[in-house]
Image 1: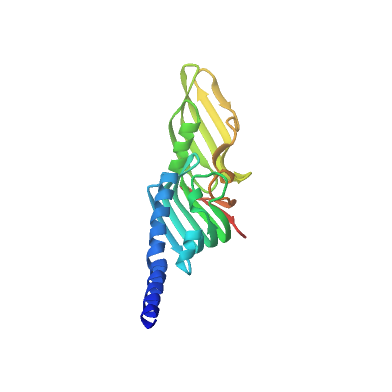
Image 2: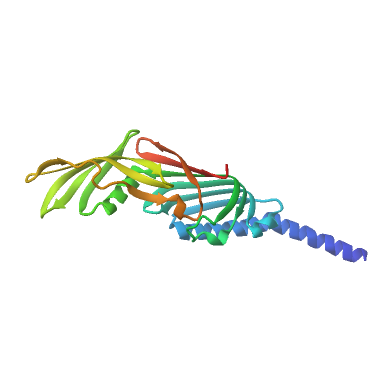
Length: 229
């Protein structure tokens, strides 16, 4: 009986050590691979904390810290994306869904992303039909871009201005001015001719959160979204 008790204690110690020292690392590696594939990210780092560690198997974590570099969110490339959460109930198998079910609940959840002016320039080149040689710069007030567009067989100079803003659960590029000029038509100021351009929709993503703040800086913009408060 004494020998059985010793063996039982040893097994329990091994299970406890596995759940605290080995299991989190295995879960972190698996989650990192899933996120990297889903977001087409260049690199992903994941840190999970839970006591006891076996709770991670049920998707329960005391703390989650995720960092993704070069992640694709909707139609925009995000230079750095971070997700920090506390008291999280997650479904790690739902990272490919678009119904917010990857995070079922959280005591606190904060998502931040940094988008460069180069990423916005690349997005505009793809979204604006027949626009070429676009170059963009950004300051705290606006993004300014210039290039060429083909109109009725002729090349015209194009100049546009706009800002990144949040509305209706999504992040948009809002065009405030659009000028087109060529030798035939002269100059036309078309205002927000192209309308708002959706960058990504938080309501159509694995993690459901509300965009809380958009800060535009020289050369980049920082997005902050929160949930569970």
